[in-house]
Image (cartoon, rainbow, N blue to C red; front, side, top):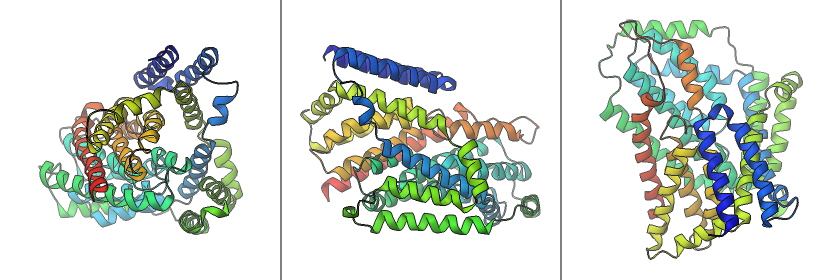
Length: 443
């Protein structure tokens, strides 16, 4: 390993570890480390002035911002509130059905819009339902944990559901249709397997008394609480139409027309904001997620600085040249990707791992490498509460709800409560990633 590779890799690793240990200061840590990485790369002679900024995947950031704007407009239309009430009605207040229905809702929604926005509006209704039907700590941990994992799987199911998939779409590594037809069925099968294991083997609702009258009253109370929350049809209709048109453009327009995914997102996001100019202006001024954009921009710069030293190329070559069958090489990479994501979270891990995956894709089918990587990153982000994108939000919402068990003791949802759910999810999703890679390689 050369001196530039050693120094830049050490800086990246130090930033990843520090931001994982001190998440409250993660933006400050990563931005500062990115500045140091640019300076180090320049002094070491691995890049020319301005070279890193030119290489930043701005198209990915445009997709993220545009989809965030569309999610905010859908949230303002009160669509998610009505979905939560509909989920309550379908579940009929039964603890087992509540677990299954809310997880299924979040799986579907997270494949289309920002899962943080959906979670912020749907989970409070689920928590109120918990309080009404009377629950215990084990049930809350498994039900909320399953919702978080469903968010991750739903996000990995489509090219616009979460950052790792968006990074592939924006970077041109896979087309929208190719990713959707491969990752969608795989994540759906993994989600169904996880749901069956939780409901049939773990059985978190075991021990909770089922009282038909109580559950019916709970549903009536939820609907009464949201009776005045009416769907804004003048917003949700056009927003849904825009989303459908964006899907049509991604899947039907030939590449020769030059209508790239980021251009579709830009036009779609702008059109969504113009549905209601007042709401659109409020979204731009007050709800623009500058923190996420700045964090990812800094991460891209650090990863590009390390790439300029040739380290990722060397690591990928070392992996390819190991005396292992090609399938085992890919399997080893996917397991490492899952473990790295569990430690450092999805965004930072995916930005670095894709550089290695790009080299592996020269020796292996690209769709196998990239979809397998997306599933492994999903496994890692589902392993620990700190690695899950929506983990801190779910923990805060649960604390705010002040849930209590039958003895009046507070019910917590934190790192250790989520851990059993996370470990089971990691095993099943990582196994799904390896199974997908084996099936795609050998069939």
